[in-house]
Image 1 (cartoon, helix red, strand yellow):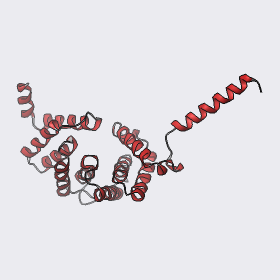
Image 2 (cartoon, one colour; image 1 turned 45 degrees about the horizontal axis):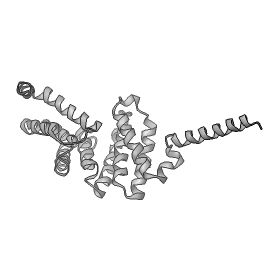
Image 3 (spheres, helix red, strand yellow; image 1 turned 90 degrees about the vertical axis):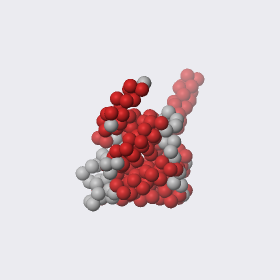
Image 4 (cartoon, one colour; image 1 turned 180 degrees about the vertical axis):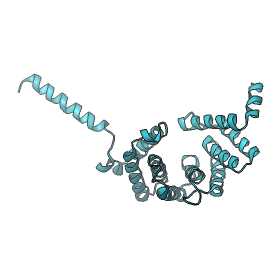
Length: 228
């Protein structure tokens, strides 16, 4: 074999190995199950990407597969974060199947409760926040929806992690549904004022709180503009 061919063969081997290392783990290969930290990193990215697009544009089967892996890792490693990410991933998956999702919302609830039992503070009180949104948004009576439970979990979330705007945003939405306008407005204002990093989730929650104030409390918006 010529020296040129040897070099070409070596280059192909290196490129192949690099491609294998950079490929996203497939749930069926077991790579995530061997490295929980890798799963947690990839799950966080998948959640962020899924939330940024319409449900119809999400990779539904991949979200479901990742949720199953997260649930297994949560049980094996007793990991609150894996359970929490599995709950969120499963919820994002069900949003792509709205006509058949209702009977399966209990799975989202179960996984979030598992995370809550291990570490209620993880991800800025993420288990409480996830349960709050689930109970607030799911239909009552025919599913797990329960505004009273949503209020309890959001109040607990802001108690444990007042620095996270999403906790205040959820509380404001529930209080607004209860027609407690003053308390809802204060919760939205707290979301705007909450000190936090510049993560996409925090920025999105602050923007959502600003929009709620503009739509639901236009007088406040006018006063705020005058103050500026």
